[in-house]
Image (tube, rainbow, N blue to C red; front, side, top):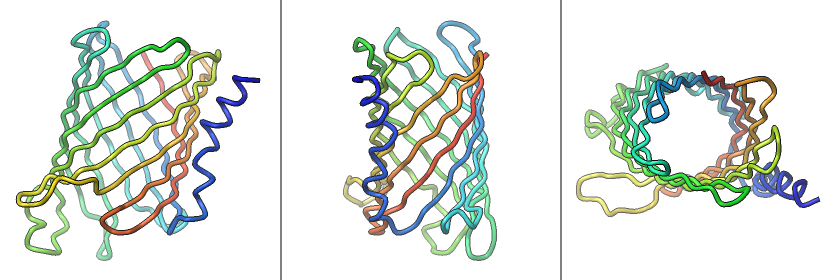
Amino acid sequence: MKRLIVIALACLTGFSVSAQTKSFQVWTGIGTSYDFSKRLSLDFEAESRFQQNAKTLKQVSAAVGARYSVTKPIFVGVGYEFADKYKKNGYFPVHTFSANVGYKKKLGDFRLGIQTKLTTEKNTYIKNPEDIYPEWKQKNKIKFAYAGLRRIKPSVAVETYHLLEAGSDYHVSTVKYSASCAIDFRKNFELGVGYMFRHEIDKCEYISIATFSLSKSF
C-alpha cells in the first residue's frame, strides 16, 4: 500500500493545479547515453515541443553532453544544444552552451539529486537591440526519486531559473514543478511519462506540460 501511495503522489501531484494554467503543451523526446568508463559518460537527446494546446510545433532540438564523476556523489558536465524555435515570422535557430555541477545521494529507497547549471543562449531572432547579446541563465534543480520498485521509478522535482543580466537584480524568473514515472520495459530501455507545471513569473504565465520520453543506455 505504501508503494502505491508513493507512485500515485509522484505521477498525479501536478494535475491538481492544471486548471490554473494559461496553455497546455506536449514535449516528447528520445535519448541515449554511453558510459566510456565508471566516471565518464556521453549523452544525446532529441526533443520536440508542441504549444497552443499541442496544435503548433513550438521547438525541435538536439543536444549532446558529457558528464564526469569527480567523486561518487559529485559530478560535473558540459553540453551544447541546437534548437529551432517558432516565432511569428517562422523558425529561428538558437545555440545554447551549458556547464553544470551536481550531487547525488542514496537515502534508503529514495534518491536525492541536486544540480546547478550555467547556460548561455544565443538567439538568431532579433526583435530588440538587446537581442544581439547572449542570454545568461542559472538553473537550480532538486529531485527526489523512489527506487523501491523493480521496474517503476517515480520522481518529483523543482527547478528555478535565474536571469543573469548586467545591472539586473538576481531573482527567480521561472519555476518548474514536475512529477514523472520512468518505466524499465526492456533491457537498458526506459520509458518516461510525466507532468510539469511551469510558472513564468516575469511574464505572469502558467503552463501545463505533458512529457513523454524514450531512452536507451549502453
